[in-house]
View (cartoon, rainbow, N blue to C red):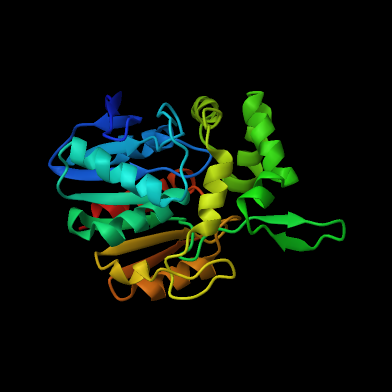
Amino acid sequence: MKNIQLNQIELPNNEMYSYRQYIGGEKVIVLVHGNLASSKFYDELIQELPEEYTAYAIDMRGFGRSTYNRPIDTLRDFAGDLKLFVDQLKLKKFDLLGWSTGGAVSMLFCSNYEYMVNRLFLIDSAGISGYHSYAVDDKGKKILLKSRKEIQEDKTKIELLEALERNDKEYYRNIWDTAIYNKNKPKPEVFEAQLEESLLQRNLMDVYYGLTKFNISNYYNGLSMGTGEVDRINVPTIILQGDSDLLITVDEAKEMKESIGDNAELVIVKECGHSPMVDAQEVLVRCISED
């Protein structure tokens, strides 16, 4: 079994960044987790990667054991932190893998620092025009939440935040069971460790607002104009999307592939939910291993 070490490093912006590291061979991959998660969720994937890979899985600011001294304004702050991190470790060229919210962060990083990225892997990633939050009225109608205030006052978001504050593992177990692990679940001991990591999050409302504001498309998404940064993603890109994902649709993945262009390949995985690390680990490892 690989010895995955948990380390910390101080970034120039005075945040302490926690990360998991396995020193293997010359190929380097940097792994960016999603919302309600941390670097811990990559442990099983790192174990299965070929020995020639050295892996760094980060805890983004306000997740896991990283600090949250300065609240984020947008997901762009996470991408900036990532740049500080790879510079601190003197990583010059690497594969970059982002899952869910981490996919949005990875797209921002790649569109601005493409020269550092060999290949980009977008795993059930947030779409190019963001991930919007909705409330549901008494008649069952969905209402788009347009501002930070509306998100902070949303009943569902408040319940999530209160569950975090009271360290309610069972509440979060139900969230993961129904929304993410709707096809398969990790081994019980792995799941318990992941739930403990979920409960370390300190930036919940800011992340949901950041996902709402995210828009690197070339169009207006109903809330903000797109920045067009998707046009600057020119590295080889693998978009891996579960066909049974309850959070991100196959259509969003198809739009991502069309927007990035011929350098992108879309892999749709059958009977796979929002976590290919659990539902389709062999497919994910094969995608990473194939040059």
